[in-house]
Image (cartoon, rainbow, N blue to C red; front, side):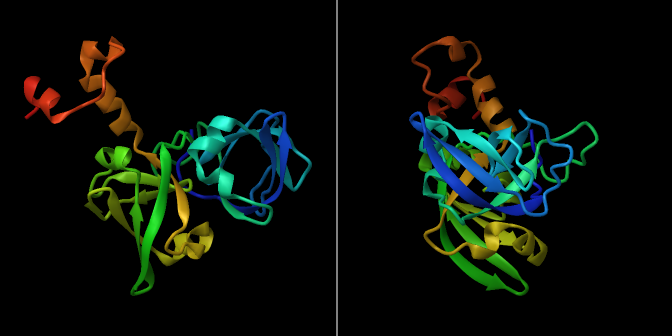
Length: 218
């Protein structure tokens, strides 16, 4: 588990095809690896990866076909800047929100505008994720815990303060940029819970307006 508070900006230094998937080397910059052991988790642009080698100034990790298919990892190359966060410990401050490191989909930056010293971003999420994004709710963008300021269909707006811009890769976001999205954990589990006994049925297709009305939620 993670908090979505980025600890360092690192860089991809190698992407090596290996047995049908990819092994990646991440140079971790100012991230303290002193307490990191083999097998520990580190979030890279919000993707939970397992450290399989620790050469000193970074770590190697294996990236599965599933991760390549469901995230923007496929677009990374040697030299790409990435957001980094080590996994939670029992004494960590929960400065953002609970983040699993399991990306739900890839969004796209639609617009970027200055807003005093902050920057306003508009991001388009995949249509299937729109129902999980709420005004003033939490969302993770490339591993960064953020608050949704407005929602319009599958698009949502973020106001990013100077500190967040300086400490993450968001400073480089421009329209057309692909970003990893993870919706709030509670929203996903609530949808499943509302299905009740129907969750065990193979044909269950999720929460619909009809289902909510039938079960007294509307």
